[in-house]
Length: 307
Ligand code: PMV
Image 1: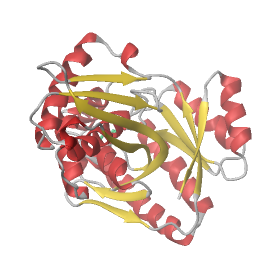
Image 2 (image 1 turned 30 degrees about the vertical axis):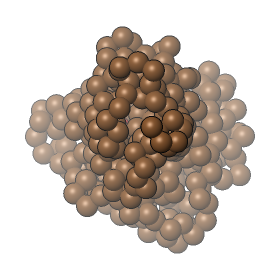
Image 3 (image 1 turned 45 degrees about the horizontal axis):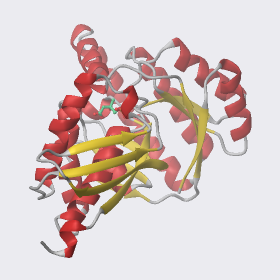
């Protein structure tokens, strides 16, 4: 056995927020997402048993038993995709909450993929990482758009389209974002299914909302290119209103968005699948006021700079 086989390999990946376009992205509309500095780190070592194992620090105690079984299946799929055939002992440390819409699952998958490719002696391209991590994501999310994985691999701000994949967007100035945590939420799959039911029940209304979100995303990309944060904030507000009409917001999320705007944020919206989870507020210069407003409502928050 060579030295490399005995060595521990490490990987890291960022969590994400969706700036605009969640849900519509599942239906072919482009979305804008951003990697945040908090995420996952992974260490992979040879296993001393015949079966691979994964411990997730910071989250595992909160995971229901059926999720533990899915994790085992996902780990096997990911290992195979990375070219690792021997059992491994994997440990992940997670710095973001699970099931909050911050891309924890993709961050875990990409951090593990980086470590597993290292173990296989391969230097992966972005495409290889995205393909491998998607094998993990499919176990949990069925048919995800892939935006979480793309953001976890690329970081920064990305333009993502299901059919075309991701491209990085250069920013004319860094974005100061507050993230408010409303609590756990239903699975992404459940929320995506809920939107599909809404779209089928309401005839053309789903289509119309997705078309409006497409317009907002396109305008937001312009606003990012010119550094027009006021315009970006307004577009985020409008996106939140459209997500509310898709029935994926909640009273808590609406209340947090209103509180953030009153505290001076340029715009606020739910981020991710909704039904709980997180909101984001574009809050340059009023980060503390926004976080305190949320605290006053009983919700913790984080601050992230996106550059
Ligand atoms: O799992 P979340 O909360 O990060 O949301 C993913 C974004 C969706 O558009 C709702 C689903 C998807 O696959 O893109």
